[in-house]
Image (tube, rainbow, N blue to C red; front, side, top):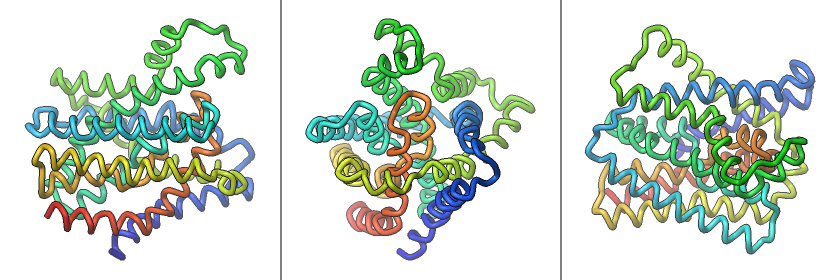
Length: 317
């Protein structure tokens, strides 16, 4: 249990280092807003392309894993929308709650799967990520456009196109989705790895996690953390309870036990993804609240993650 908690601490420490850098204006004013753009347009697309271009889409568990994780995502999204309606929050807050509920920390999931369940666990985690990463990104982008795409366009002084045009433009101009489609397409066509290109992208991908965590930490405003209130509580319930519970129920329904079930559970017990902050910044979500959600969920996971893993091992064997 202690070793699991320790695995979360470096992530939280990177967030705190980023917050200190911003407080001390290091290395310069405006630096971290530039890192946000670098992460959104270069580092995360490189990470997604690197992952999808090397994944094994022929694994026989792909369909069942896809069904389990997509059902969990859909159920969690319904829960978040219901909570947002109950709390009567604004659309940007709703979209940040949605991201905090359905997104997952890919790096931590893969690291835990490998550490806990070896090569088989890592393979299954990559398989699950191949389903969830493109699905969540498309779903979140479409949801954000539907929730507040027109108001964001007005605030930026742009002409407001039709709703269908907003959705299409958001999808084809989103570097995360483009990188997923490109990586998966080249993979399925048997054209990867690409000499020089794949190696370069892989190096960029390794820089994504530390740079984004530092940027998220730099964006944290402690007054926002104090004011997140029930929006954080319900988004955390969605992430750690609803998503995980739906995964467990789906595994039971489909008769999946052992390591495959345990790895699927990991997608619900890890904190939300740092990439949610960059997306909130670019698409008009409540980015400061999103940064607070990421920080608080990561801190909460130091306690909740070991308990959840041990409980799932007891249930699924």
